[in-house]
Length: 305
Image 1 (spheres, rainbow, N blue to C red):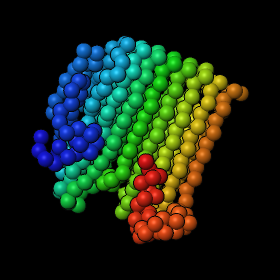
Image 2: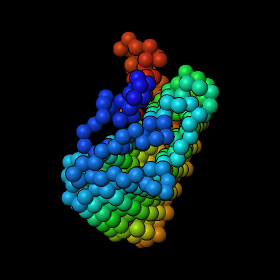
Image 3: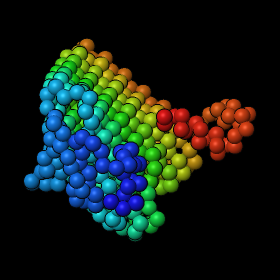
């Protein structure tokens, strides 16, 4: 792995070297390396690019790393990863994609991740997207997540895209059984002519299940963002969807949160707020000796923290 690839790996997965335990690292469209642990097995798919991950029932306090690195300009790939999480598990999965595009052609990674959580399983999923390059080629990432949560299972997703991605369409679909919980927190920052779209669809099918979806974003320059969210309450359940965005310069942000109650005991809330940085915030920070640009950076960093 060269210096550029190592930098990308650190940016998206926080790794300085090959991790201990279970991992699968993909570089430039090929499997770079993988390793199983006692409780986590990784099987390469035979019919299409991607892997199947099996976590044994009762596995606790283990982690899995599955980063993707692209440093070859013009490379486009579609990968399918399926996660089969056994009963009573508690695991952390660190994913993410980093692209370095030094050429004139577009580089693209599209990943379709399917999560199947068994009864009482708990998963924390962390996904970071990062792009860089010294050419004119675009960095494109289109992640799709499908989650099926069994009784009393818990899935927490933290996703971040804060630099260098020219175009992204992030799609998440989930179905929840009795007592299941889904929490999604995403952070997005766009600049230049970049475009980002988030599309959530959640079916709260089980009794006493719940979902909490929060998107925080900053749109700079002439970038565009779209937030779409559909939460359907099909039983006695609770659902909350929220979009909070800061808009700057000539950017555009569209938020379309939608809630649908199909049961008398479905409790659903949606919120959307889009606005510029308040003048009093800038003035307060400027009294501490910061410039207006430094003020903005401080506010944005705190907002996306």
